[in-house]
Length: 216
Image (cartoon, rainbow, N blue to C red; front, top):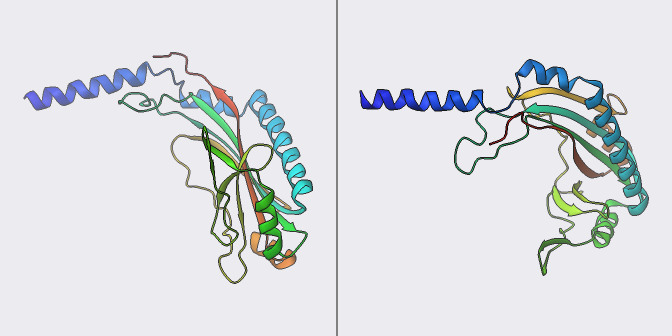
């Protein structure tokens, strides 16, 4: 009986936490995810990321050949923050991710070491810098690119080729996800056949956050 009553008490606590979580109903957040304000924020962020990629291409002597853009919105779990150490996330988050593939102006065997040498070192602690990646080490590598943090990767001829980005499986917290390719329909394999070994730059940015209606 004590175990039964204890189980009922736990269920009641979880239910009360969910009701007071400050996370609006899913249909409200889905409507918000499709709103003009959220769409405009996404467009502004994409413009900024595209400008950054264009500057990266100029800085490192790269020619853009393919990009995959992922626009996703998701809601928080109503149980976030219930257990010790768990994070209370915003009610809704919108994030844009662009995976851009470039053809280097020189053979990749020479272009990648030169690119790595020009990357700024990444600060880890107050007086420490993380070492730059090795040209023949599989990526993706988390680096500074001169404008911010990014993940970069590249084809290693005779070794490992990059795999195409694949959308993750949608969860019940996904409100909206849109994936597009530029040029439309072009695959990584086709881009590699046309331009040879490639270098990839992976940028992400949060463009919208909806706070919880209640805070704890």
